[in-house]
Image 1 (cartoon, rainbow, N blue to C red):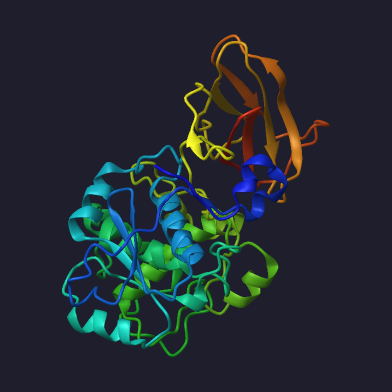
Image 2 (tube, rainbow, N blue to C red):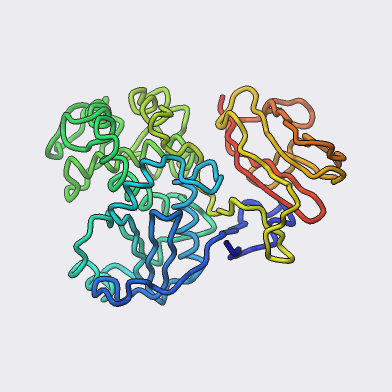
Length: 381
């Protein structure tokens, strides 16, 4: 795999971690250009051998790569290079899961696609002006997380785990929870939702099954913390009230239990638009076989303690540190250690001064003279 990096310098400086956009995918030519439905697409990325991105020629490369990175992060949430749920991978691949990116709503390419597409894999679309690689999933700026989640859920989870995620009335744990969240079972939209409802979507073009898919999306991204800022909470309150992870856990207990059940391997970490599970030397743009590895922390999310396993060649010096979303170093775990063997270092969620840090997304980073690897971790309290 060759690295395609929008801002490669990130791996040299954690100070720009919030805008790194390091994506290890290549944009290829459309392999289905001879198909009438797909004939207007010129850009293509195959994600983890189960999910496809198709885009018109006018879509900037950085936006195509962003869609691929988000899809990869959602499917491979621990970013080890493999889809977390092999059953989901098989289902998405069998159904031809994809998301098309169009120049705008109603473009000729969009009309042509829906006039001729007869597959089972397209459950959502993206338009050029609703993709923002600098604000992954942020409400009002980037719809990529939402639309990709819809495809993965509609084409994958509803089929492989129908008892949990089927969308027909009275069919699953999901619809049971949604009926509680809406204050009752409403096959048709009510004129007014009951005051005890916290999910009150009022799009009359969205039927009961559509409502269930939307509800599942809200629950997943709320649990990730994507909606937790004050502006977003205010902006979505007319549709969805428990906008923070804490409110969600306390309010929607049925869905919190469902999407955090490890049986279903629903992604828990918010995509940040960066996906590069192999360690790459930026200057040489090649994989280094030095033996450095930074593994997935366990548990993740965690409270109060997590273990970070690493490997480093004997005789090499390196550091491991914890950084917040702004790129600030908040805790040094290892400083210039002379490696003698693989090891494990623990983090208790505290800062350099021993102060407990707030819940949220952090990054842990292993750095040596010619190697850098960064992974995400979530502290929950």
